Length: 352
Image (cartoon, rainbow, N blue to C red; front, top):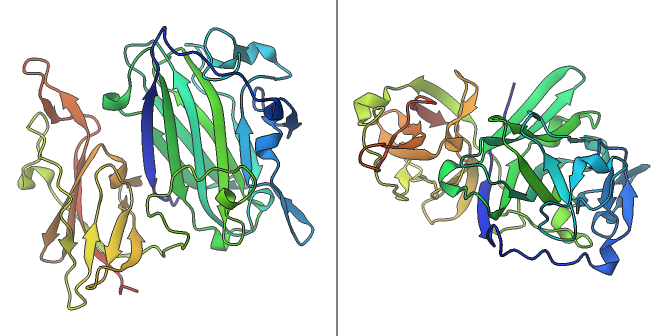
C-alpha cells in the first residue's frame, strides 16, 4: 500500500456557541444536482457543482459542494445547528463512520494530481477525536489510505471551525476505474454537525480551481506548476531517545531552518511548521521537488505527526516525529506516549 502526504490542514474558528448567525442560502444555490451518493451527499449544490469537461467520451466533474440543505433522507440533516442556511449534516454519538462520497477516477480527472476537501464542523464535546479518511481502491486492492486527525490544540468546543485538507496523488498509473471514497471516522463517539462541504479533484489538464466557482482550498506552494516527488533511495530506523526525544519529556522548539542534503549538489530540505510535505531547493533557492516522509517499515507518513524535527546526519536526513500531550501537573507540553515517537534516516535519489 502506498500513501501520499497531506499538504495542509487548517482549522479556522468562527463564531461561538450563541453568537453565530447562519447566513441565508443564496438564490443561485437553491437548486440541487443528484449523483447517487449516500444521503445527505445525494443532493449536491447544482451551482457550485456545475463545472464539467469532456475528455474523449468522458464527462469530468472536478468540483463538488454540499450545503446540507436537502436530502432524500432528511433524518441525516438537522436544524439544531447550521453554518449557513437552515440545516447541517448530523453525526450522532453512536455513528462511528459518517456517510460518504465515492467517485471513479475517470469521472473526476484526466490524470489525477490532488484531492482537496474542506468543511465546517461544530461540536460541544470537550474533546473531539475525528479523522478525515480518503481511500483509493482498484477492485479489492487498496492503493491509498489517507487519514488526518483534528488536532487537539486546534479544536474549540461550541465553535464552528473550518477543516481543510489537500492530498497529492500520483495518478499517472491509474486506469480510471479506481474508486475514491471519502468519509469521517468518529473515533470517540462524539456528536457533531458538518456543513458546507467542498470536494475538488485536480487534474493535469483540468485543475479544479480554475473552473466555474471551484475553490483552491489549499495550495501551500502558491504555484500552478506541479513539482515532482523525490523518491527515497535508502532508509534506516533511528532511536528518538538518542536524539533527546523521550516520552513525557519536554517538547523541543519548532525550527524552520533548512537542512543541508549530503552530497555536492548543495540541495536543502525545507519543512514549514505544520506542513506535511517537505520542499527540496537547489543551491540558488529554486524549488526542485517535494518530499513526503513515508516510513515504509510502519506504513505511516511521519509528517502527519503533530511535531516533526529534521537534522542532518552523516548518511542522510534524520527525521524525528511525535505527538504532543499536556503535563497534568505543570500544564506544559510534553512528548506524547501514544502514538510512540518515531525516527528514521533517509537518503534521496538523485535530485532533479
